Image (cartoon, rainbow, N blue to C red; front, side, top):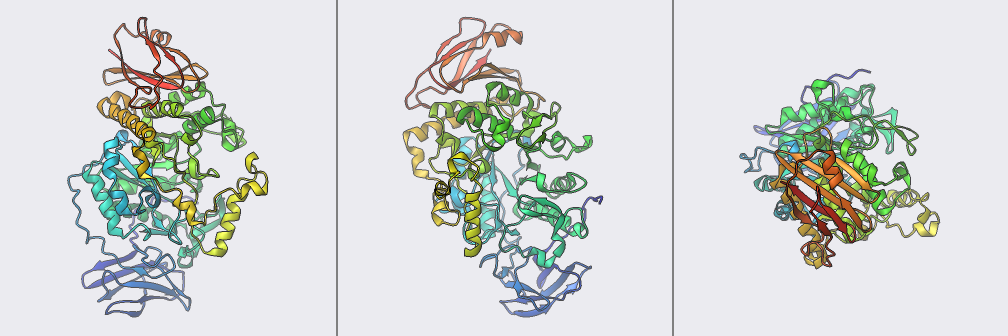
Length: 626
């Protein structure tokens, strides 16, 4: 079934109008829908009027912001509004009318950032601060600004069952979770970020809904389809009968975050699971709608493992128009190289520095080769795509939270190797993404946690432990009992960052290194994300990598040894690029006492055509070539 671009605004929910509130909701064909107001002078039942076949609409005089309300379909139970702006009593309780214009913004001066200027910091509101709230996160944004971050990416906020969730079981697409605060608290967070010069991205999940409290299918039975399946069950209906309204709802929700919350960008979760015959059509619609809705520049990133260059090609060239895509190959090569992981998708990677160099040169490693894990060819050539459109990381919520124990990469490798790997990440020509806490080598894990109703919770716990049965260390049932129970409050509590440890010597040293590396990116655009369509990286041996950055009239070289001791000779690489003679200056070494509590400085010989760095252990040195 061909799809058409969604252009008409749907605008569902409960919104103030002169003298009252206008209520608009999806409704099943042929069913009577009754609005039930629980508060205020207009409390009581109000039969809804049909506005077209699948939408009900009614203005109720006397209704006001703060009133709670539900919908009753036929003779059924009261249900919350699928487009509610707030669920103060949880996802099963009444919705509350919110006036999105009541908040006083102070960000009229904010002009936004360019997509090429991003250092993205991914955080989970519930575990980022001791408070676990929007206010708690807002109070610490200045720390992120001072670190050198330019964009904060909030993990999904859609309200979920219970009072804690790792983020990807949301069921109320329009309602920021009441576990984190009032909607105006989220607005204050965004407003504060803009005051500090930080962009705000929101992680949105359109490919599935959580397993409890997803009442939208009662209002619109065609929301899901049996035509396609995903890892979460039936797919969202994007190309079957009744799909037009589903598409309109998704696009309206994307517009909503720019319109009512002033966000600067979206990260679209698992776009490979947004399945439709016209591949990528819904993503293209979201991109166009976002750019139309926001008065400022916006950026849209996607999570997608397929390595499709078309996703980040411009619309004029027939692409999807995305500003960036999570390029996981960088992470997978690094994890295999540094920690030796070889289970699951890591089986596709050898973990060599040559693979790492090819990834930095090309944006991703797989450009059409056979994937052993997927038993199919994977990837496309991205040689024409600007490097800044590849978003790379050493860790993110998936690569930590989907591990059995929620452990981070720096929990597994030595501090010197972590410093070297961090330097490679922050000097590569792609857009770097940090996951909360990595900038200070946080000791806390980030685990998968839920708070669904008890019977479903037992299934979640069993499923979580069964998921790792093929891993050698969890092949026995007794071993799997060590996997933290997602339903236990302790699993969430263990994932909350410990802000006090940041002042301890080892953690403070890592923080100082990240701050110095990000300051270099800010002071020297040649070290930032690149508009060039290829990186410049070589692997002089099986444990070292060299990156050359040359833009804006500056030349920098990064020599990194990721394993063991040994020399890295830059002379052959400099000669191969026919660089003129010039002075080499050390800009930064990860073994400086400020960054290494037990420094083991490398010996650096700059007497030849290029420096020779003799590393005593893993580390990195950044040179500037005059």
